[in-house]
Length: 155
Image 1 (cartoon, helix red, strand yellow):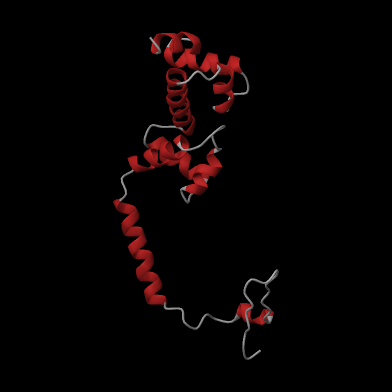
Image 2 (image 1 turned 60 degrees about the horizontal axis):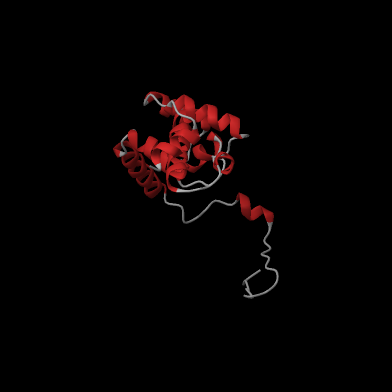
């Protein structure tokens, strides 16, 4: 093929080329530029404060609606494996579960004090399998049941 023709707004688009092109060297690759870019990225990563990871994870979890994502999803979002995320959080004396619990508790308190949503619905929105698990979690964290908390906060 000496040329390539594209048709826009078509129902289907396709590009065909010989498979041996996949093995051909990339002629415009610049090794020195690639190495400089990698060095710059590594330098920028060294500047990032470790605590920023905790804040990034916490902020990401806070923006989620419903059940919070698995550690695999959060790790991928932060361009690392789940094992690396666990290790890095551990170095900062956190676990993923700690951060999930923080976000769940904060959101629960906010919803209980500022809305009339049924407690069962709040439990469901926070990803608890049932109201009983939510009530146990909330009491363990605050010393109050969700109903008691709602009553004291809405006065």
